[in-house]
Amino acid sequence: MAVFTVNGKTVTAEKNQKLLRFLRDELRLTSVKDGCSEGACGTCTVLIDGKPTKACVPQTDKLEGKTILTVEGLSDWEKKVYTWAFGEAGAVQCGFCIPGMVISAKALLDTNPDPSREEAAFAIRNNICRCTGYVKIIDGILLAAKCFREGTLPEETADWKVGSRVHRVDVEEKVTGTGQYPDDVYLDGMLYGSAVRSQYPRARVLAIHTEEAKALPGVVCVLTAADIPGSNKVGHLKKDWDTMIAVGDITHYLGDAICLVAAKTPEALAQAKALVKVDYEELPAVHNPQEAILPDAPLVHREGNLLAHKHIQRGNPAEALAKSKYLITRRFSTPWTEHAFLEPECAVACPDGDGVLVLSTDQGAYDTQHEIMGMLGLPAEQVKVRNCLVGGGFGGKEDVTVQHHAALIAYLTKRPVKVKLTRAESLLIHPKRHPMEMEFSLGCDENGIIQGVAAECIADTGAYA
Ligand code: FES
Image 1 (tube, rainbow, N blue to C red):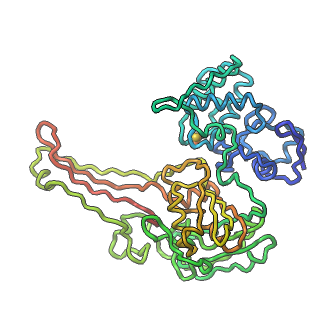
Image 2: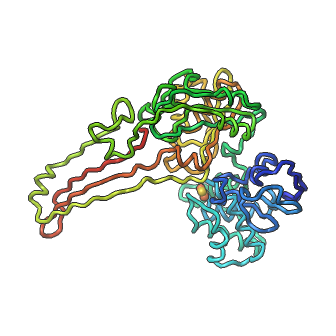
Image 3: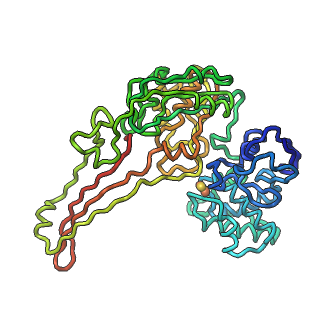
């Protein structure tokens, strides 16, 4: 147990836990964002005795007598200044990193009211932003510093005519941390859900033993593919992605869900997941298109390993290359690219009449609705998807990852549930930008004018379309 001050109020942390969890789950100070829980991203930065600190690092038992400040505890004047300055600088996009940035800025400006650009950059060295980049955030900090020094804010002059320079409409809620991402939603009686993932990239699931997990106090359900009322398969481009891998079926990658556990607390959830035992028959995997293309390659999906083949031709490239004075052939490779949005995937679902309502951080609310309709076997009227703020996506949040799992738990248990990925799960599960192996042949004439190009590009879509 520890007694300390948060935003001017004395609080008692009964249970020893990460400060981040205490601030969010018990005090509901949701400006303190959970981007990684590993001390890496800085979205949970708070001031402890005036020093910027990632709230996911210290345990509450170590904070006896300390003074903690979150964005909620800034004065109204400070909130106004940061909102105006960040809005004016265009320093806010998805907003997920911004409260942490504001706290780091405050730590600087409290001791150095007229910082240089370099000092402002140094102050946010532990805060990652994936959307805005740092130039405009530094501009925002320097503008805020000027306002604090002068003690005034410029008049709002934007007239919202076409061509006017205006602040984002959501800048205030993103700077002050009042805007809601799904993880900021806490509902009465809300369960916590999560999937047990495959141990092998390719293996046949022989049996799923859920009895021990189900018997654990606090566990509400353990669901498998057999519990899905509609179709197990989802996928926007092709319905090839199993909501869960059924007994007898084969996994396609390490991110595959085997079963879903829902419990009354995150602690019971973690314990229950560890109690689920799965019997597998490990099978040879296919790791890249070069392996997948071999005649005797194992099949990732029953229909084969080729998702799509496109041939585009204009003119006669073979002839053009043959007639070219100079010919050059080179190979190029691009890697898997992670989107690295700062907000990990999270969805909250609750019963809604005979159907479900899903609060999501979504790049395509209608796609998500259609996937859930198919999986639950429900018409559109019974599946509502409401988008909360989206803490970055960049294409990595187009597919369903947690939304359909949350919907299934809420639909079957008739209780609200939050399903959220850890940063490690997020990296493992969501699709990436395709790596490509490319061979280009270019022919040109004696003046360097290109006469023809022939190219072969092989893209690795991973386990699913
Ligand atoms: Fe910084 Fe999106 S605005 S991560």
